[in-house]
Length: 215
Image 1 (tube, rainbow, N blue to C red):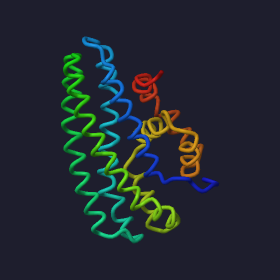
Image 2 (image 1 turned 120 degrees about the vertical axis):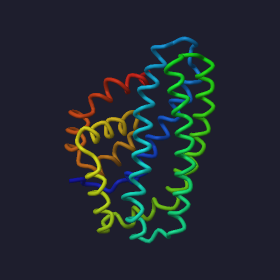
Image 3 (image 1 turned 60 degrees about the vertical axis):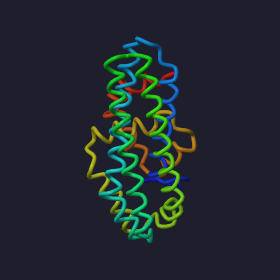
Image 4 (image 1 turned 45 degrees about the horizontal axis):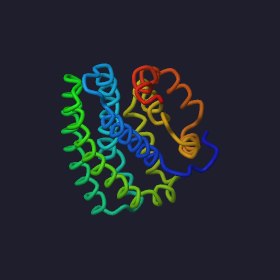
């Protein structure tokens, strides 16, 4: 069992990982060299993972988190505003996805510059939403940590992920995490669970994606 109080919610830990990847993409695209097909392919692998993680997160919030948040007192208008922000984020995610696919095909600096501009827009939209959501929910999540709705939410999120999906998720969540973030993760999820899932089922992430950001 987790033995200490987390310093931030799992939701905020996921947001931190999203922010890290957006910063990484911005930096990598700004530094892209024309014709570097190996780098274009590597960035696309990282993008496919990021796209899947962010999409799964906001779709999971619709399905699982919103009912739990309402149960602990987050008002309906706040949830509605999150949905509006999700729609804007999904639209920007789609345009960035098309740009990253195009860069993967062409490996051109022109397409990297276009992708960088769309990534900047996605980052602005996404971080605006993450900041808003954390401002509204983070204290409530901490206050109601042992509420039955929170426990049911955790179980429902677990049901949405098989071991392979969870392993990639935990490997991604830890990649570049700070000491504070790792402590919060271990206070939320038992260490052996993280070790088994990320160790056994996170190999694909460690082999195909983590090296994209190494160094």
